[in-house]
Amino acid sequence: MRRHLTVLLGGAALVVAAGCDSFLNEPDVARDPNNPTEATRNQLFVATQSALFGLQESGIAQTVCMWMQQCAGLGGRFVEQRGTNYQRLTGDYNTDFAGVYTGGGLLDLRRIQASAVADGDNVYAGVAKVMEAFLIGFAADAWGNIPYSEAAGENPTPKFDDQLEIYAALQTLLDEAITDLGGAGDGPGTFDLVYGGDKDKWTQAAYTLKARYFMHTAEGPTRGTFNTSAYQSAITAANNGISSRANDFRAFHGSGTSERNIWYQFETASGFGQDLVAGSVLVNLMKQRNDPRLADYFEPNEAGGFGGLDVNADTPANQISSLNLSAEFRQPLITWAENQLILAEAKFQTGGGAAAAATHVNAVRQAYGLAPLPAGSVTLQAIMEEKYVALFQNVEVWSDYRRTCLPVLDPAGAETVIPGRVYYGTSEENANPNTPSVGEQDAANGGRNPNDPTACTP
Image (cartoon, rainbow, N blue to C red):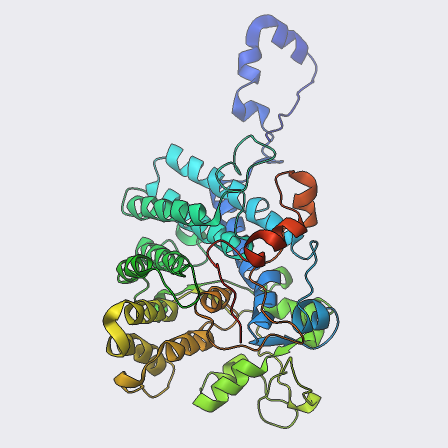
Protein backbone atom coordinates (compact mmCIF):
# COMPACT_ATOMS: atom_id res chain seq x y z
CA MET A 1 0.00 0.00 0.00
CA ARG A 2 1.35 3.42 -0.94
CA ARG A 3 1.83 5.99 1.82
CA HIS A 4 2.02 9.68 0.91
CA LEU A 5 4.24 12.21 2.64
CA THR A 6 2.22 15.02 4.26
CA VAL A 7 3.85 18.42 3.82
CA LEU A 8 2.97 21.06 6.42
CA LEU A 9 5.62 23.75 6.11
CA GLY A 10 4.96 27.48 6.58
CA GLY A 11 2.34 28.61 4.09
CA ALA A 12 1.63 25.19 2.58
CA ALA A 13 -2.01 25.39 3.55
CA LEU A 14 -2.28 28.77 1.85
CA VAL A 15 -0.79 27.32 -1.31
CA VAL A 16 -3.38 24.56 -1.31
CA ALA A 17 -6.12 27.12 -0.75
CA ALA A 18 -4.80 29.08 -3.70
CA GLY A 19 -5.63 26.19 -6.03
CA CYS A 20 -2.22 24.50 -6.41
CA ASP A 21 -3.24 21.23 -4.73
CA SER A 22 -2.82 19.35 -8.01
CA PHE A 23 0.87 20.27 -8.02
CA LEU A 24 1.39 19.03 -4.47
CA ASN A 25 -0.37 15.77 -5.28
CA GLU A 26 1.99 14.93 -8.12
CA PRO A 27 3.66 11.56 -7.36
CA ASP A 28 7.21 12.95 -7.38
CA VAL A 29 6.24 15.62 -4.82
CA ALA A 30 4.19 13.35 -2.57
CA ARG A 31 6.92 10.68 -2.38
CA ASP A 32 9.92 11.13 -0.07
CA PRO A 33 12.99 9.98 -2.08
CA ASN A 34 14.85 9.18 1.14
CA ASN A 35 12.11 6.86 2.42
CA PRO A 36 10.86 4.75 -0.49
CA THR A 37 7.57 2.98 0.18
CA GLU A 38 7.51 0.64 -2.82
CA ALA A 39 10.12 -1.75 -4.13
CA THR A 40 11.18 -1.47 -7.74
CA ARG A 41 10.44 -4.31 -10.17
CA ASN A 42 14.04 -5.46 -10.02
CA GLN A 43 14.05 -5.43 -6.21
CA LEU A 44 10.83 -7.43 -6.14
CA PHE A 45 12.30 -9.91 -8.59
CA VAL A 46 15.40 -10.57 -6.51
CA ALA A 47 13.14 -11.02 -3.48
CA THR A 48 10.88 -13.51 -5.27
CA GLN A 49 13.81 -15.58 -6.48
CA SER A 50 15.33 -15.66 -3.01
CA ALA A 51 12.00 -16.65 -1.48
CA LEU A 52 11.59 -19.46 -4.02
CA PHE A 53 15.05 -20.78 -3.19
CA GLY A 54 14.06 -20.83 0.47
CA LEU A 55 10.83 -22.74 -0.16
CA GLN A 56 12.63 -25.32 -2.29
CA GLU A 57 15.31 -25.93 0.34
CA SER A 58 13.58 -25.63 3.71
CA GLY A 59 10.83 -27.39 5.65
CA ILE A 60 9.03 -29.40 2.99
CA ALA A 61 12.23 -30.29 1.13
CA GLN A 62 13.80 -31.60 4.32
CA THR A 63 10.65 -33.52 5.23
CA VAL A 64 10.55 -35.10 1.76
CA CYS A 65 14.23 -36.03 2.03
CA MET A 66 13.40 -38.00 5.19
CA TRP A 67 10.16 -39.55 3.95
CA MET A 68 11.98 -40.67 0.81
CA GLN A 69 14.79 -42.04 3.04
CA GLN A 70 17.48 -40.05 1.27
CA CYS A 71 17.96 -38.42 4.68
CA ALA A 72 16.92 -39.46 8.18
CA GLY A 73 16.00 -37.74 11.43
CA LEU A 74 18.59 -38.55 14.08
CA GLY A 75 17.59 -36.38 17.02
CA GLY A 76 15.28 -33.71 18.36
CA ARG A 77 11.91 -33.19 16.74
CA PHE A 78 12.88 -35.11 13.62
CA VAL A 79 12.82 -38.54 15.25
CA GLU A 80 9.03 -38.56 15.62
CA GLN A 81 7.73 -35.80 13.41
CA ARG A 82 9.73 -36.73 10.35
CA GLY A 83 11.38 -40.08 10.84
CA THR A 84 9.71 -42.91 12.73
CA ASN A 85 5.97 -42.29 12.72
CA TYR A 86 5.40 -39.40 10.30
CA GLN A 87 3.81 -37.23 12.96
CA ARG A 88 2.55 -34.10 11.19
CA LEU A 89 1.32 -30.97 12.91
CA THR A 90 -0.76 -28.21 11.34
CA GLY A 91 1.77 -25.67 12.59
CA ASP A 92 4.70 -27.37 10.84
CA TYR A 93 4.25 -25.64 7.50
CA ASN A 94 2.70 -22.28 8.36
CA THR A 95 5.72 -20.40 7.03
CA ASP A 96 5.93 -22.50 3.88
CA PHE A 97 2.26 -22.07 3.01
CA ALA A 98 2.30 -18.33 3.67
CA GLY A 99 5.45 -18.01 1.56
CA VAL A 100 3.57 -19.25 -1.48
CA TYR A 101 1.51 -16.08 -1.46
CA THR A 102 3.26 -13.33 0.52
CA GLY A 103 6.81 -12.18 1.26
CA GLY A 104 8.11 -12.74 -2.27
CA GLY A 105 5.38 -15.14 -3.31
CA LEU A 106 2.47 -15.00 -5.76
CA LEU A 107 1.37 -11.45 -4.92
CA ASP A 108 4.81 -10.01 -5.68
CA LEU A 109 5.14 -12.07 -8.86
CA ARG A 110 1.84 -10.63 -10.07
CA ARG A 111 3.11 -7.11 -9.30
CA ILE A 112 6.21 -7.82 -11.36
CA GLN A 113 4.12 -9.06 -14.26
CA ALA A 114 1.81 -6.03 -14.16
CA SER A 115 4.76 -3.64 -14.07
CA ALA A 116 6.49 -5.43 -16.94
CA VAL A 117 3.37 -5.45 -19.11
CA ALA A 118 2.83 -1.73 -18.44
CA ASP A 119 6.37 -1.04 -19.64
CA GLY A 120 6.09 -3.32 -22.68
CA ASP A 121 8.73 -5.73 -21.39
CA ASN A 122 7.31 -9.08 -22.47
CA VAL A 123 10.51 -10.93 -21.63
CA TYR A 124 10.36 -9.78 -18.01
CA ALA A 125 6.70 -10.79 -17.80
CA GLY A 126 7.54 -14.20 -19.27
CA VAL A 127 10.28 -14.84 -16.72
CA ALA A 128 7.91 -13.91 -13.88
CA LYS A 129 5.28 -16.29 -15.27
CA VAL A 130 7.76 -19.17 -15.26
CA MET A 131 8.54 -18.30 -11.64
CA GLU A 132 4.83 -18.29 -10.82
CA ALA A 133 4.34 -21.70 -12.44
CA PHE A 134 7.28 -23.11 -10.48
CA LEU A 135 5.98 -21.65 -7.20
CA ILE A 136 2.35 -22.71 -7.58
CA GLY A 137 3.30 -26.12 -8.94
CA PHE A 138 5.40 -26.69 -5.82
CA ALA A 139 2.42 -25.81 -3.63
CA ALA A 140 0.01 -28.03 -5.58
CA ASP A 141 2.49 -30.91 -5.34
CA ALA A 142 2.65 -30.60 -1.55
CA TRP A 143 -0.89 -29.62 -0.55
CA GLY A 144 -3.01 -30.68 -3.53
CA ASN A 145 -5.97 -28.32 -3.65
CA ILE A 146 -4.87 -24.76 -2.87
CA PRO A 147 -6.15 -21.20 -3.42
CA TYR A 148 -5.01 -20.01 -6.84
CA SER A 149 -7.67 -18.57 -9.14
CA GLU A 150 -8.84 -16.16 -6.42
CA ALA A 151 -5.61 -15.95 -4.44
CA ALA A 152 -4.31 -12.68 -5.87
CA GLY A 153 -7.62 -10.85 -6.02
CA GLU A 154 -9.73 -8.90 -3.55
CA ASN A 155 -11.38 -11.93 -1.94
CA PRO A 156 -9.88 -12.34 1.58
CA THR A 157 -11.15 -15.93 1.76
CA PRO A 158 -10.30 -17.44 -1.65
CA LYS A 159 -11.63 -20.83 -2.66
CA PHE A 160 -9.41 -23.89 -2.90
CA ASP A 161 -8.99 -24.94 -6.53
CA ASP A 162 -8.71 -28.59 -7.52
CA GLN A 163 -5.11 -29.73 -7.93
CA LEU A 164 -5.64 -31.10 -11.44
CA GLU A 165 -7.27 -27.84 -12.54
CA ILE A 166 -4.25 -25.98 -11.17
CA TYR A 167 -1.86 -28.13 -13.22
CA ALA A 168 -3.94 -27.38 -16.33
CA ALA A 169 -3.84 -23.64 -15.55
CA LEU A 170 -0.07 -23.80 -15.14
CA GLN A 171 0.30 -25.41 -18.56
CA THR A 172 -1.55 -22.43 -20.04
CA LEU A 173 0.56 -20.01 -18.00
CA LEU A 174 3.79 -21.65 -19.18
CA ASP A 175 2.63 -21.46 -22.80
CA GLU A 176 2.04 -17.73 -22.29
CA ALA A 177 5.48 -17.40 -20.70
CA ILE A 178 7.18 -19.11 -23.63
CA THR A 179 5.43 -16.75 -26.05
CA ASP A 180 6.40 -13.74 -23.94
CA LEU A 181 10.02 -14.86 -23.77
CA GLY A 182 10.13 -14.73 -27.55
CA GLY A 183 8.87 -11.15 -27.57
CA ALA A 184 10.24 -7.68 -26.93
CA GLY A 185 11.91 -6.42 -23.80
CA ASP A 186 15.13 -6.54 -21.83
CA GLY A 187 13.98 -8.78 -19.00
CA PRO A 188 15.61 -8.75 -15.55
CA GLY A 189 19.18 -8.89 -16.84
CA THR A 190 21.77 -9.07 -14.07
CA PHE A 191 19.06 -8.96 -11.40
CA ASP A 192 18.26 -12.54 -12.39
CA LEU A 193 20.26 -14.68 -9.95
CA VAL A 194 19.69 -17.89 -11.90
CA TYR A 195 20.20 -17.23 -15.61
CA GLY A 196 21.40 -13.61 -15.77
CA GLY A 197 18.41 -12.76 -17.95
CA ASP A 198 19.15 -15.39 -20.63
CA LYS A 199 15.72 -15.87 -22.18
CA ASP A 200 16.69 -19.03 -24.05
CA LYS A 201 17.59 -20.73 -20.77
CA TRP A 202 14.33 -19.54 -19.22
CA THR A 203 12.44 -20.96 -22.20
CA GLN A 204 14.10 -24.34 -21.76
CA ALA A 205 13.28 -24.31 -18.03
CA ALA A 206 9.66 -23.53 -18.89
CA TYR A 207 9.46 -26.57 -21.17
CA THR A 208 10.98 -28.83 -18.51
CA LEU A 209 8.44 -27.54 -15.99
CA LYS A 210 5.69 -28.34 -18.49
CA ALA A 211 7.06 -31.86 -18.80
CA ARG A 212 7.26 -32.18 -15.00
CA TYR A 213 3.64 -31.16 -14.52
CA PHE A 214 2.42 -33.49 -17.26
CA MET A 215 4.19 -36.28 -15.38
CA HIS A 216 2.26 -35.29 -12.26
CA THR A 217 -0.98 -36.17 -14.05
CA ALA A 218 0.23 -39.52 -15.41
CA GLU A 219 -0.88 -41.79 -12.57
CA GLY A 220 -3.94 -43.82 -13.51
CA PRO A 221 -7.05 -44.51 -11.42
CA THR A 222 -5.57 -47.75 -10.03
CA ARG A 223 -2.04 -48.62 -9.02
CA GLY A 224 0.06 -49.67 -11.99
CA THR A 225 -2.06 -47.88 -14.61
CA PHE A 226 -0.93 -44.70 -16.32
CA ASN A 227 -2.25 -41.89 -18.48
CA THR A 228 -0.56 -42.35 -21.85
CA SER A 229 -1.59 -38.93 -23.15
CA ALA A 230 0.10 -37.25 -20.20
CA TYR A 231 3.30 -39.13 -20.98
CA GLN A 232 3.08 -38.15 -24.65
CA SER A 233 2.64 -34.50 -23.71
CA ALA A 234 5.62 -34.76 -21.37
CA ILE A 235 7.78 -36.09 -24.21
CA THR A 236 6.77 -33.21 -26.48
CA ALA A 237 7.62 -30.65 -23.81
CA ALA A 238 10.85 -32.30 -22.68
CA ASN A 239 12.14 -32.40 -26.26
CA ASN A 240 12.39 -28.62 -25.92
CA GLY A 241 13.54 -28.67 -22.30
CA ILE A 242 16.86 -28.08 -20.58
CA SER A 243 19.47 -29.14 -23.10
CA SER A 244 22.63 -29.33 -20.98
CA ARG A 245 23.83 -29.31 -17.39
CA ALA A 246 25.09 -25.78 -17.97
CA ASN A 247 21.46 -24.68 -18.32
CA ASP A 248 20.23 -26.16 -15.03
CA PHE A 249 17.99 -23.94 -12.90
CA ARG A 250 20.02 -23.67 -9.70
CA ALA A 251 19.47 -21.59 -6.58
CA PHE A 252 21.99 -18.82 -5.97
CA HIS A 253 23.72 -18.40 -2.60
CA GLY A 254 26.42 -16.20 -1.12
CA SER A 255 28.68 -16.24 1.91
CA GLY A 256 26.60 -13.74 3.90
CA THR A 257 24.69 -15.29 6.80
CA SER A 258 21.25 -14.73 5.29
CA GLU A 259 22.40 -15.69 1.78
CA ARG A 260 23.68 -19.16 2.59
CA ASN A 261 22.19 -22.41 1.36
CA ILE A 262 19.22 -23.26 3.61
CA TRP A 263 20.38 -26.83 4.18
CA TYR A 264 23.71 -25.44 5.39
CA GLN A 265 21.98 -22.83 7.56
CA PHE A 266 19.85 -25.56 9.12
CA GLU A 267 22.90 -27.48 10.29
CA THR A 268 25.09 -24.55 11.35
CA ALA A 269 22.73 -21.85 12.58
CA SER A 270 19.37 -23.41 13.50
CA GLY A 271 20.46 -25.22 16.64
CA PHE A 272 19.41 -28.59 15.24
CA GLY A 273 22.91 -29.47 14.04
CA GLN A 274 23.23 -33.15 13.16
CA ASP A 275 19.53 -33.92 13.66
CA LEU A 276 19.36 -34.51 9.89
CA VAL A 277 21.75 -37.15 8.52
CA ALA A 278 22.18 -39.55 5.60
CA GLY A 279 19.41 -42.06 4.91
CA SER A 280 20.32 -45.71 4.47
CA VAL A 281 18.30 -46.35 1.30
CA LEU A 282 20.10 -43.73 -0.78
CA VAL A 283 23.54 -44.45 0.66
CA ASN A 284 23.22 -48.21 0.13
CA LEU A 285 21.97 -47.76 -3.42
CA MET A 286 24.86 -45.46 -4.28
CA LYS A 287 27.38 -47.86 -2.74
CA GLN A 288 25.95 -50.74 -4.79
CA ARG A 289 26.35 -48.63 -7.92
CA ASN A 290 29.84 -47.38 -7.01
CA ASP A 291 28.38 -43.95 -7.60
CA PRO A 292 31.09 -41.26 -7.59
CA ARG A 293 28.62 -38.70 -6.23
CA LEU A 294 28.56 -40.44 -2.83
CA ALA A 295 31.30 -38.19 -1.43
CA ASP A 296 29.58 -35.13 -2.93
CA TYR A 297 26.37 -35.89 -1.06
CA PHE A 298 27.71 -37.20 2.26
CA GLU A 299 30.66 -36.96 4.63
CA PRO A 300 32.62 -40.09 5.65
CA ASN A 301 31.39 -41.55 8.93
CA GLU A 302 33.56 -42.12 12.00
CA ALA A 303 34.55 -45.53 10.67
CA GLY A 304 35.94 -43.94 7.50
CA GLY A 305 33.23 -45.16 5.13
CA PHE A 306 29.72 -44.12 4.19
CA GLY A 307 26.52 -45.22 5.82
CA GLY A 308 22.99 -44.06 6.48
CA LEU A 309 20.49 -44.29 9.30
CA ASP A 310 17.92 -47.05 8.76
CA VAL A 311 14.53 -45.90 10.04
CA ASN A 312 13.55 -49.52 10.73
CA ALA A 313 16.72 -50.85 12.36
CA ASP A 314 19.27 -49.85 14.96
CA THR A 315 22.20 -48.18 13.26
CA PRO A 316 25.46 -47.65 15.19
CA ALA A 317 26.23 -43.95 15.43
CA ASN A 318 29.74 -44.38 14.03
CA GLN A 319 28.24 -45.87 10.86
CA ILE A 320 26.08 -42.85 10.02
CA SER A 321 27.31 -40.18 7.59
CA SER A 322 26.38 -36.54 7.86
CA LEU A 323 25.26 -34.47 4.88
CA ASN A 324 28.01 -32.78 2.88
CA LEU A 325 26.84 -29.18 2.94
CA SER A 326 28.29 -25.91 1.66
CA ALA A 327 27.21 -22.35 2.36
CA GLU A 328 27.38 -21.29 -1.28
CA PHE A 329 26.21 -24.51 -2.92
CA ARG A 330 23.79 -23.74 -5.74
CA GLN A 331 21.02 -26.25 -5.16
CA PRO A 332 19.82 -27.78 -8.47
CA LEU A 333 16.05 -27.32 -8.75
CA ILE A 334 15.12 -27.95 -12.41
CA THR A 335 17.77 -29.84 -14.32
CA TRP A 336 18.95 -31.48 -17.50
CA ALA A 337 19.14 -34.81 -15.64
CA GLU A 338 15.48 -34.54 -14.64
CA ASN A 339 14.55 -33.67 -18.23
CA GLN A 340 16.44 -36.69 -19.57
CA LEU A 341 14.86 -39.05 -17.07
CA ILE A 342 11.38 -37.69 -17.79
CA LEU A 343 12.02 -38.67 -21.40
CA ALA A 344 13.27 -42.08 -20.29
CA GLU A 345 10.19 -42.86 -18.18
CA ALA A 346 7.67 -41.43 -20.62
CA LYS A 347 9.14 -43.27 -23.61
CA PHE A 348 9.41 -46.51 -21.63
CA GLN A 349 5.75 -46.24 -20.62
CA THR A 350 4.44 -45.40 -24.09
CA GLY A 351 5.79 -48.30 -26.08
CA GLY A 352 9.39 -47.27 -26.62
CA GLY A 353 10.57 -49.81 -24.09
CA ALA A 354 14.09 -50.33 -22.79
CA ALA A 355 15.88 -49.29 -25.97
CA ALA A 356 14.21 -45.86 -26.14
CA ALA A 357 14.73 -45.24 -22.43
CA ALA A 358 18.37 -46.37 -22.42
CA THR A 359 19.53 -43.40 -24.52
CA HIS A 360 18.42 -40.97 -21.82
CA VAL A 361 19.35 -43.09 -18.80
CA ASN A 362 22.85 -43.65 -20.12
CA ALA A 363 23.31 -39.99 -21.00
CA VAL A 364 22.77 -39.18 -17.32
CA ARG A 365 24.92 -42.06 -16.08
CA GLN A 366 27.85 -41.13 -18.29
CA ALA A 367 27.55 -37.46 -17.35
CA TYR A 368 28.18 -38.49 -13.72
CA GLY A 369 30.95 -41.01 -14.37
CA LEU A 370 28.93 -44.24 -14.43
CA ALA A 371 29.14 -46.96 -17.05
CA PRO A 372 26.17 -47.23 -19.44
CA LEU A 373 23.57 -49.94 -18.91
CA PRO A 374 22.94 -52.49 -21.65
CA ALA A 375 19.99 -51.16 -23.63
CA GLY A 376 17.90 -54.25 -23.07
CA SER A 377 18.37 -54.20 -19.30
CA VAL A 378 16.76 -50.82 -18.62
CA THR A 379 13.60 -51.20 -16.53
CA LEU A 380 11.22 -48.71 -14.95
CA GLN A 381 12.92 -49.43 -11.64
CA ALA A 382 16.32 -48.62 -13.15
CA ILE A 383 14.97 -45.33 -14.51
CA MET A 384 13.42 -44.27 -11.23
CA GLU A 385 16.47 -45.27 -9.18
CA GLU A 386 18.61 -43.18 -11.51
CA LYS A 387 16.32 -40.22 -10.92
CA TYR A 388 16.19 -40.90 -7.16
CA VAL A 389 19.97 -40.52 -7.00
CA ALA A 390 20.20 -37.57 -9.40
CA LEU A 391 17.52 -35.55 -7.58
CA PHE A 392 18.94 -35.78 -4.06
CA GLN A 393 17.39 -33.05 -1.84
CA ASN A 394 14.86 -32.19 -4.56
CA VAL A 395 11.15 -32.37 -3.67
CA GLU A 396 10.43 -33.88 -7.10
CA VAL A 397 11.46 -37.36 -5.86
CA TRP A 398 8.26 -37.38 -3.77
CA SER A 399 6.08 -36.95 -6.87
CA ASP A 400 8.08 -39.65 -8.66
CA TYR A 401 7.53 -42.06 -5.77
CA ARG A 402 3.80 -41.35 -5.48
CA ARG A 403 3.40 -42.01 -9.21
CA THR A 404 5.55 -45.14 -9.60
CA CYS A 405 6.14 -46.44 -6.03
CA LEU A 406 9.82 -46.61 -6.95
CA PRO A 407 12.30 -47.01 -5.48
CA VAL A 408 10.65 -49.51 -3.16
CA LEU A 409 10.63 -48.01 0.34
CA ASP A 410 9.69 -49.66 3.61
CA PRO A 411 7.59 -47.14 5.58
CA ALA A 412 9.04 -46.16 8.93
CA GLY A 413 8.13 -47.97 12.13
CA ALA A 414 4.61 -49.35 12.30
CA GLU A 415 3.35 -47.15 9.46
CA THR A 416 2.05 -48.90 6.36
CA VAL A 417 2.32 -46.02 3.88
CA ILE A 418 4.45 -42.92 3.45
CA PRO A 419 2.40 -39.70 3.64
CA GLY A 420 1.14 -38.38 0.33
CA ARG A 421 0.72 -34.74 1.37
CA VAL A 422 1.28 -32.21 4.15
CA TYR A 423 -1.40 -30.42 6.16
CA TYR A 424 -2.52 -26.85 5.65
CA GLY A 425 -1.11 -24.62 8.37
CA THR A 426 -2.97 -23.42 11.46
CA SER A 427 -2.72 -19.84 10.25
CA GLU A 428 -4.57 -20.71 7.04
CA GLU A 429 -7.24 -22.59 9.00
CA ASN A 430 -7.80 -19.52 11.19
CA ALA A 431 -7.81 -17.00 8.34
CA ASN A 432 -9.76 -18.82 5.63
CA PRO A 433 -12.98 -20.72 6.46
CA ASN A 434 -12.65 -22.57 3.15
CA THR A 435 -9.65 -24.49 4.55
CA PRO A 436 -10.50 -28.18 5.06
CA SER A 437 -9.99 -29.47 8.58
CA VAL A 438 -7.39 -32.13 9.33
CA GLY A 439 -10.17 -34.70 9.53
CA GLU A 440 -11.47 -33.68 6.12
CA GLN A 441 -7.97 -33.78 4.67
CA ASP A 442 -7.37 -37.29 6.02
CA ALA A 443 -10.75 -38.49 4.74
CA ALA A 444 -10.34 -37.16 1.20
CA ASN A 445 -8.79 -39.81 -1.07
CA GLY A 446 -7.21 -41.57 1.88
CA GLY A 447 -5.19 -38.50 2.82
CA ARG A 448 -3.63 -38.14 -0.63
CA ASN A 449 -3.86 -35.52 -3.33
CA PRO A 450 -6.21 -35.83 -6.33
CA ASN A 451 -3.40 -36.84 -8.71
CA ASP A 452 -2.45 -39.75 -6.44
CA PRO A 453 -5.51 -42.01 -6.17
CA THR A 454 -3.73 -45.06 -4.72
CA ALA A 455 -1.10 -45.23 -1.99
CA CYS A 456 2.18 -47.08 -2.42
CA THR A 457 2.53 -50.18 -0.27
CA PRO A 458 5.80 -52.11 0.25
